[in-house]
Image (cartoon, rainbow, N blue to C red; front, side):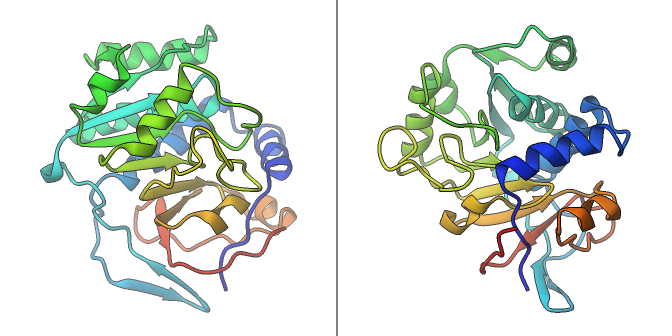
Length: 257
């Protein structure tokens, strides 16, 4: 079988439940999500042999961008929770030995995001206002602009950023969704993002319906989901090996809940 997907409405409700009955804080969830994102771009502690569990087949996490491929990572950060995940990922990547640069044009005034930004500044991580220049001087990009709650039209400065990501040859890892994509319907039919299909996607908690349009390597990170919550939302929880926070899925169909 393949992992069932989680639509936008249920994803929002699940987050609320994790913060109420699950007793998680938004800080904790963001930290866990950012840790998963950072691991998608870092070397696995294990080998690359397929892991077969029941009827579900997973590939072990590959070294999608180990430091020897280039240490420079550009993190494109949006104004919401998806952007917060990117800020956390940037901090972990710095500690792994990478050289992250953060593009964060619409910085939130909320205390949580200000603290995440300050943590990066304390490490000497640079923030840039020039995305094009930064893109020309990086080895990998993390797209943490828009997540599962995105809807509507992409506006500046992000429309130009997504167009640049669409056309770049630099590998991109998208967080939960390639920015501009509809969670239900995938890429827009026209405009920024219509041809954006990055090589890597990390789904948080569970895949979203848009994965039926995704053609790259797909990871899932959700090694914190209580069994009772997974059962309520009819989610398949993959078996995570060792200390890994993510698993890579083989291509295949998904059952919408």
